[in-house]
Image (cartoon, rainbow, N blue to C red):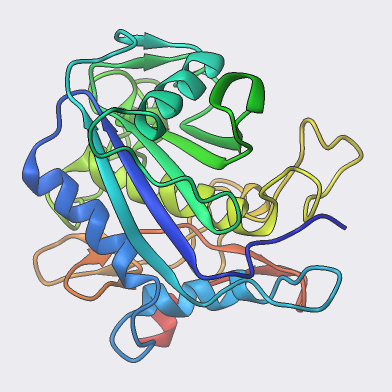
Amino acid sequence: MGPVLTNNITVHIIWYGTWQKPQKKIIREFISSISASPAASTVAGWWKTVQLYTDQTGSNISRSVALGQEKNDRFYSHGKSLTRLSIQSVIKSAVTAKSQPLPINPKSGLYLLLTSDDVYVQDFCGQVCGFHYFTFPSIVGYTLPYAWVGNSAKLCPGVCAYPFAVPAYMPQLKPAKSPNGDAGVDGMVSVIAHEIAELASNPLANAWYAGQDPSFPVEIADLCEGIYGTGGGGSYTGQMLEGRDGATYNMNGIRRRYLVQWVWNHVVNYCTGPNALDQ
């Protein structure tokens, strides 16, 4: 019965650590594709499933997802090993910075902390590739919905950038070719999508989730983990597209292709999204 993000959503990015310009571009263009015309972008078609979720007044999640302001934290202000709590301190630094602080936008702002491939975050690789929650007023001064996603390229690409990298225990598997030539960042895109979908439908951990325990909720993207196309389930990803260049993807953005996992559709009771059979 909690709120969902019905106001136009603005994504403010904090780039923590060392990032290359092309890496930033892949991620920015994915976020910009969410609100593109569905004819130009199947990423926008994917967001339509997320939009089906409503609050108790019947208002749907916003169609509009825009890039907001960005903050670079290239000097690793809180070190190269972060805990879940210190992530909130990084966000506090970004919204209280003396020069160009990120705007405080509790109703429709979404704060996305992205860590570069040389930063370790608590539970990264073992349990999570990303997570979302809300900031504590005692640390940040405000309750802001946020997500963290890490670049796994050096630490655990076989876990968090699959299928563009495969785990060491599956040597017989050949990794798929990533659509934008950067396995770590292409893997991040799907996790970013996963977290934005869940933040929109469950920003304060009291709206849409399955299971009895809101502190360990199973949310709309968790239910479709590893499913990218028709027939997906178990260890099968479902039908994906292969480009002329051999790259694997399932969605078109405004300028690029992406591989993004599906999300749970509560109207039809299964995972849905654009895929190879729709092209």
